[in-house]
Amino acid sequence: DTVITATDMAEDANAAGGSVLVAEVLRQRLVRERARWEAFNRRAREEEEYRAARWRWRWPLNPPARGGNNDDDDDPRATTMFEQPGRGTTRSTTMSTAATGARTEPTNGDDDDDDEPMCRICFGGEEEGAKGADRLFAPCQCRGSQGLVHVRCLNQWRARSRNNASYFECNTCHYRYHLERAAWAGRLEDPRVLAATSGCVVFFAVLSVGVVVRLAATRALVPLFARLAALAERAGVTGATLDAVANLGTPRPSHGWRDSVRTAYAACGSAGGTAGANNKCDSRALRVALREAHRVVTRSIALVDASPLHLEFAFYRVVEWLPPWWCVGALDGWNDHFRARVTVDQLVGESSSADLGSRRGRWWWWWSPRHCAGDVADALDTAVAGLVVLGFAAFGWNLGTRLRGNFRFNFEHLLLPLAMMVSSHGARTARLIVPLGVVGGYYEVYRAVRVWSKELLTRFGERVLEVRPRPG
Image (cartoon, one colour):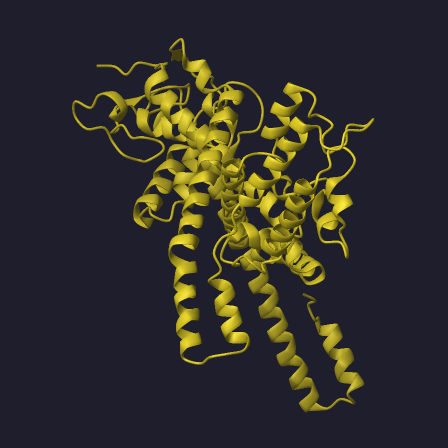
């Protein structure tokens, strides 16, 4: 802010023609500006004193064992003293006053050994006869009120800290803990084991959610809308409303068309079809089976003969993706199946029986995703439904977490671009949302598994040895 001096006021008065009223207005203006300037300087001094006092309080009693800046952002004591809302204000203020007074003069040793021992993380004391995880011990070279910590508190901090170095060393004095480990302890820290465990957790979660979603659709929602459609038809309801309710009550399409196609291919392979130089498999039964299969697949994926309550089919339709286990004959992908006109020759193709002469080729051909059995195809559809639900759920949870953390930044750099993408590409944006959600969910599971492995390791696989045994 700019301070108005007496010279400026005199100049303004002269410019005003020497009016007494104008001079009084200028004087009051000068008083207000001076008061604002003094208030600004007072706030600046208070903030500077507050930062200096806070820094002195957080500084350890003894200097670190080796050079470098202390990682105060990852210090469990700083987090507990300043950032935990559940702590009482009176206790924190008392601790601040006591700690500030203790740091006004350097200490040479254990000057405060006569004080009551206290954990530097939870500020709790030690009960009489405490053993195991409830006892206080000195794992590092820190002294004074920072020298003791509960075994349980230290293990929880080591397992849950975002800084990987906190698992092996103290964040204040940078002393590396003396660890006593079991022979199998290293396996719990192997990244490959953690990644495989996380993958198994995500896999079973996808299958479980997919099964629940499919049972909810086939056993509850679809029959309910089918009954509603029947009641509406009896009541004389017609038009788009009845069609919409009836479509929601459409049963789930089956993979029965695969049996007829496989039977036609097998008959063609055993009989040789129309034998030729290129061993092309072509028969009337195969043509009829492929034509009927193409009709069933296109009507099902287009949600004509399938309810949108079956999430896998709704996802196929929205993102315009046809999985390999729903492809018919020689056609491949969405564009081939939904072109303007599909002929039987295009369904048969030129290499439909290229592998029929080899037994190994036939075995691999029958078990590939394109030519797998109906039960395998149903399981793949169930997995897709689980991926869709988990992908959207994980993406929404991650987005909500980011918005709660920094709403303005993430609103401008994440939510607005996402809204623009949805407005330009429509529902096909799910092609990006589902994979990103699945990857983000896998990462969160990996983090949780890593924390769980560290907690398991600190409980059963290793322990931190005490550096300075307490007297008596």
